[in-house]
Length: 60
Image (cartoon, rainbow, N blue to C red; front, side, top):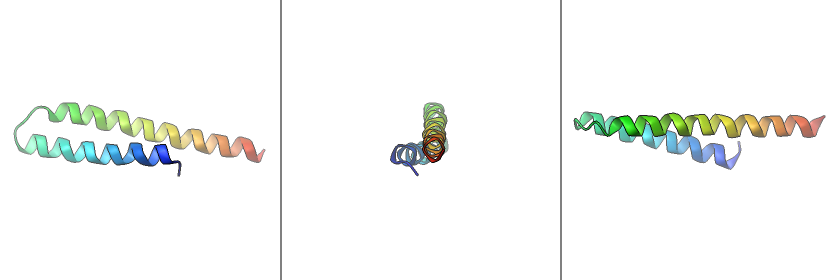
């Protein structure tokens, strides 16, 4: 798994945890954390698909 994809998925998990904590405390800033989680999730999938396509192109 590519390093950037791992980092993006770690950020996603941490952002979801921060959103849960924010909502439990009654703070609406959790919406921003959810948006960050969605963005980092998409980045993780992008880097993973890009690495798979690159590996497939190198194989033939």
